[in-house]
Length: 353
Length: 107
Image (cartoon, rainbow over all chains, first blue to last red; front, side, top):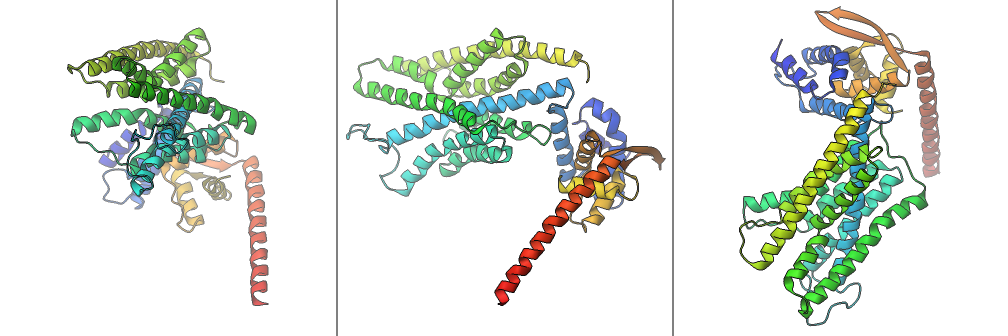
């Protein structure tokens, strides 16, 4: 066996075993004939990236199957697609929270802040301020992505989600004064949104398009995610007022804010989904697996905000509440993993129709 | 119907072909524009087989390697013809409008 053949067979291991049993030999044969005739280059000792990408795309389509796929593949496909939908609902809420917060903080929405309180970055009307305002408003693209997805337009949904993920960091590039530790913390914070985008990109494909909802129903779904985001922005504004008034102990405010920052809200949302899955354990298989997929990034994003060993009372409070949330998420994650395993076992034993 | 699926069906009109034979024929039909990667080719073949537009024909061993041939089904031929007529109609309308535009420009 040539080096090229061995390497191509190794790439084919991306495909499900049942598919390889049926197709591997003819795929290897077709690939090597192409390589011999110069399609891959006579001197090539490894498959080209485009060949590997085509096998990877086929593997994703087979492993995350649509309604016609075998039960186990369909279950994984449904789980990834529901992870994408749950993620989009969550990030739509965060998008509205971020945008309304920015509109309040920069005094665009109303003169919500006293004149002596300087908020926002950059001078009023400056390009610097415009960049920061845009970076806070651009997450509304998550709502566009969710809306497009539930209307059955998966390409638009994917493009909007990628833009929602990337544009804020292009407008305001992150800085890492603390070196690699800061880079790692930033990566953990970005991970939940990145996982949502990845689930959206790989979960919805030609064999598994999103079922389009009627326009009114789609709008209601986006509104359902938007309203809590707007209300939360008002809660954050109230907490800021309380903080300025200095009538409530700072540690209490820190505790409250840790439940309404992004990792805190992810914790609350995922725990709610976990409870829902437990209540409907017989039918919750794909949702449980979806929530399990989303839990690990949520744990890492919360862990990224902790500073073990710090001595001041505020950091101790952050560590205590954050640690509690991480522990709750882990417990929820284990519960979801158990529910998912049961569902996967049932799918594996289901007869092929 | 996607362009790769259309060209794969077209490649099978005259005779059954194996995987690499289909990829070669598609490249020829598209004047070298479309070089199907093997993963993409089998993705297209899977979909066409699921829709009963192509089916396995026979297997051969060539230089010690398996070649599985695929053939166009009657349903596949019908689907290809319908798609070809649709594309030809679209092309005809486009040409008619372009001629009208040119005639208007010259007038």
